Length: 248
Image 1 (cartoon, rainbow, N blue to C red):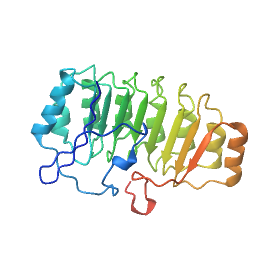
Image 2: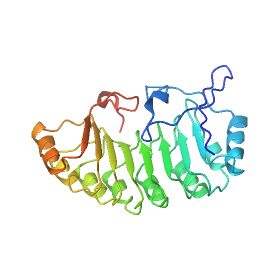
Image 3: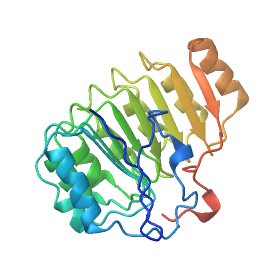
């Protein structure tokens, strides 16, 4: 049984029960729209209770929203091959924290890490999660090299990434993911040529792109090449990067 836990630490209050929604984000549940927001730390007693519930098989999903989980708490995760979903919306998980997650939860199918500056070193760890179907890293520091390291994720169906370091080379690697159906890129540095590459993705049916101006003709050509592809441009959501405030 999956139990969704939406935690908001404000005067000790705990809000429980978040309905499942959009598998790529459920942005309406993400309270701090500013990535620089200061988030209250998650109390150890609440984290330990959540971990206990998952380790005892009472649920296969762990979700922390609004509050921040520390590296110390993440590194205390026990080995739990039954955990299928891990959603940490308060960040900030770095490469070291991601390595601890991968070690503790080797059979994850869905991973969402907001406000988390994961780099190519973390991507090398992600490659070990071969059961992963949904990956959402809206504030990563992925480079093109990081994308190439994700090649072992043959089961990946939905990929959502935010990074100003991604270029056309990243798209060339992404289209080689054989089961990818939905792609969402936030703030990459692409050229029109990236859309030519994207047209070769075998199963892609949905493409979201934010804060990356390309020519109208390039999108028309993409639509002609993949007429069933749904394209979504510059939509409002809490994770959208603002280039003026980005830090490399």
